[in-house]
Amino acid sequence: MSAVQSRLVIRLFATFVWFTVLAGQFWRNLGGWWGFGAIAVIVVIGSVIGLSTQRHNARRRATANAATATATATATATATRLNAAPANASAVSSHADTEASVPVHADGAAAVSTTAAPTPAQDDTPTDRDIARGNTYQAALAPALNWRKFPKTITAFLLLATLSIAWSYYPGASALGITLQLITTLAALFLAVTLTWPELLRTLAGALRWVLALSLVFELFVAVVIRNPVLPFFVDYGNAKVPDAFYWSQGLLLAGGPIEGIVANRNLLGFIALTAIIVFIVQLRARLVKRGAGLVWLGLAVGMLLLTRSATVTVSLVAVVAALLFALWARRLHDQHRRPLYLVAAASVLAVAAALALFSSQLFGLLGRSEDLTGRFDIWASVTNLAQERPVFGWGWVSYWVPWVEPFNDLAVRKGVTYLQAHNAWLDVWLQLGIVGVILFAALVFSTLWRAWFLAVDRPRLGIEDTEPFAVSALLPLLLLAALIAQSVAESRLLIESGWVILIVLAVVTKRQQHAPRPMP
Image: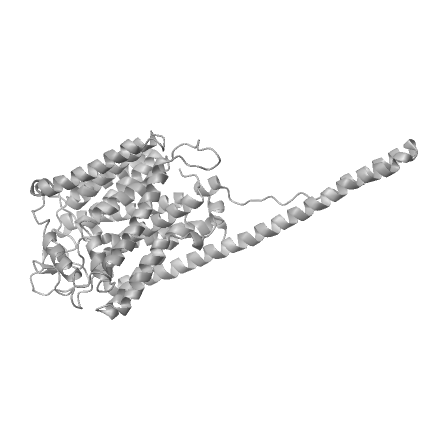
């Protein structure tokens, strides 16, 4: 298989991986847990093959470069010795007859000229710009991840989660949760290691388009053809009354929403739409897509966001806009003159916190939410009380709650629905891994945010001077992290599926960019 074909296969599989982590509920509603398990096996096998191939290519490339360097050094040394020979011959013959020495010297010079060192083989090692621009052949030669520069916070958090089996209240569920967490991490590493930055943008955008388009078609079909709420295919509730939260779609598209799309959750669909808005705008501004098509997809993403009517996503949108404004402001300032910006940012955070404390009911009303945030306060209280029983190391990692074991079987029940998350990622980590887990998780999130901030606001330093223009796509990690962190206050999705994958991908990519800067579109 040629390099171009190989990159095409990798990009197609990467798009499939992105789609799966974004719309895992689609596979579960369509084929049940067994069907989703089959999809997960495909993702695992493909990710392992992709990572192994990338590592093999990197080793083969390193061997070839070493051989080329050795051959070049040998040829250079040989040429130096041969060129030095005529000079020595000329010095010895200076005492001889000049007329006799001239032809001898000329012949010798001619001999040296014809036996000059061979031209070294052309070095086609990928340059920074080749790789950053996503050239298909050069991208195939991109080096594998340097594990010594791998984010240590990822390793520390996963190690703590794995060790928590030893003190877990539910060791079997913990083993299952950790296995799923490691599988999700493996998929994230495949995306971060095997793809160049433009390919990451391209495959993520492709998966987002598929989710949005299929969601629109699905909701339109339910609203126009079925005209009734639709349940997942693999569940049979009989004649029992089914809570609204269990439906795949309520079929409210023509009524103006809210809609759930193929992911069966309006908050999740809204966040996917917000992610799409960020990615599509970056692609348009970086001129990575045609303007007309880009605007159409951007319009669809905005429309889907509005139709979800998600208050959680509205808060995330505000956080993204704030992060963008501060980043653009920082780009206009020298790195030593940003203290006023940081003071304003800190004051803004304090002002938002004060507003929430003093005017929470009014703000929740503006967002269309009850004073208890649709039951979240009760869930948070239950989780907090349970976490306080094991505050240091927690009850054991399980990721997404499993409803068949205590204490999750009745920890968060509302209107007949057993919720399987704390609706706050930080409380979830505290419950499962204690204060130690919260510290490691915060280190992972905010170290990634730190790198993403300076990647966004500093000029690329690809040489001695930092004269390179700002890259539009360098803003993407910061904006995505701002959205994820804002969402983590009301949802625990930062710990599972697409939230965890995006976090790990950004942690690895920003770390590599920090140690080996490469141009970005």
